[in-house]
Length: 275
Image 1 (tube, rainbow, N blue to C red):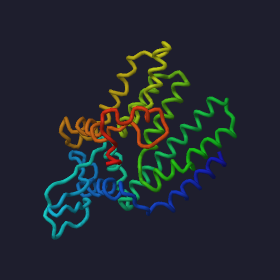
Image 2: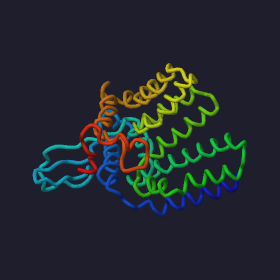
Image 3: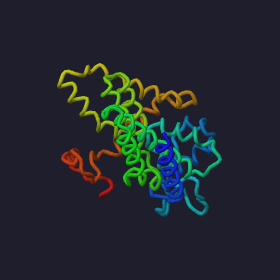
Image 4: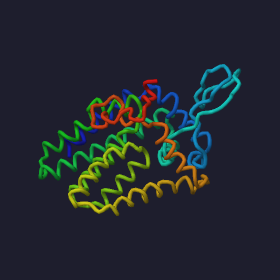
């Protein structure tokens, strides 16, 4: 426990020193969403979709929260994440910290949720080997692909990755219902969670999985819409956001070494990042 606490403190310190870095996504999307949520009453803002940036008549885009004086606004680009992520931002928006710090703090918490999932999974597989548990926990927090994603870029990929780890943990414990809940929680923030579903297909083919369990994540995703409904969102808005994400990011692979690279560009279009 002391070693885990020591590792955790160093992981927090590392992320603290990277807190001021602003990436393209935080500048154009994540920070403007946080500013919009704060400007519109925190949780009360959930009835609307946050604004990412404004289009102007001279072709210059201006992030929400920046001055538009001297520009003629011709349109706006709305946020395109599932509504539950805005709910999480709204909860943290009441803290007396900067907009960027809200995003970084949220992403950092996701890192620790993932690392704990790694620890418990290793505990189960190794029969409580403490050395392996500490090593797995440490690597999960200090791999560059983890802390750069959250502490530098302010991204939330550790959320769905963490939910994937917990999904695997409960599958190993043969608690499929609980495992599928974590699939639903992951989908409520990032549709990337779909990429772990081949595991379900393999279990089904081996007659170790009932497809009725697939209704569990669907129910969880719908439950994640409830905060938006409570604060006045139109019924279809959370659905539109979910399906909007699927339409905006259609590439199955973004230059990573995974099985999904074989399915890249099958629709005849390149990635929007390659455009």
